[in-house]
Image (cartoon, helix red, strand yellow):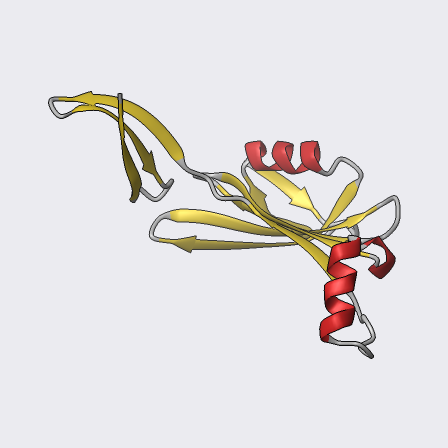
Length: 139
């Protein structure tokens, strides 16, 4: 375990060193501002809030010990929204003022495994929680 501290020096949470290394690799220019730890059916999830040193933007990273990074949410300036997003928003809400905007990336982790059975070759997709998501027959 690695003890992580917030920018002000207060204790954030005991995080596995692998998670600290992952967050630092993905966001090397950000400071951790808050860490929440949740456990569900023996699986641990960390919700980590960061602030960019470069421009002060807020970031959120969800990391699961069984799957790695599963969600990233980044504060985005309204003028940085893609043109199609702005056009759709303006068409649906012509007079709306944008208070804030965030770019959210959900990352779905699956394990795709090629197997041989008496019935032939197959590819099995399994979630990190052990649920079979799909079985495809292969030639």
